[in-house]
Image (cartoon, rainbow, N blue to C red):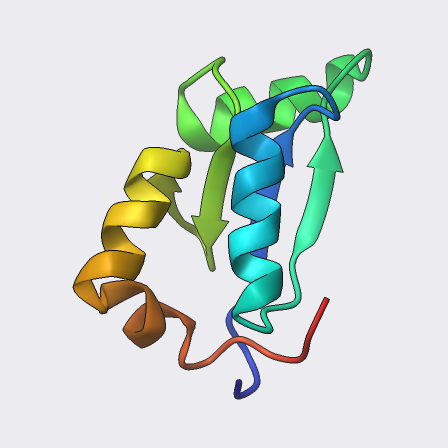
Length: 92
C-alpha cells in the first residue's frame, strides 16, 4: 500500500481480539506499530489519552481511532478499511 498513513494497535499479547486484529492487518499487507500495554503504564496512559478507552485492542489509522477488532472487521467487510489504508505503507 502507499506511503503516509500510520496504523497503530494498542493491545496485549494474550488478547485474542488483539491477535486477530494483527493477523487481519498482516494478511492485508499493512505495516503497523504494535504497542503492547501489558505492564507498561506509560503506553497504557498514551492509549487512554488517544482513545478514551481502557479496553484492547484500540486501533488507529493515522490519528483517527477506529475502535477495536469488531470495528476493524466491519470496516474491512464494507470496503472502507481499504480506503482508510490507501495511504499506509509496507508489510508487517
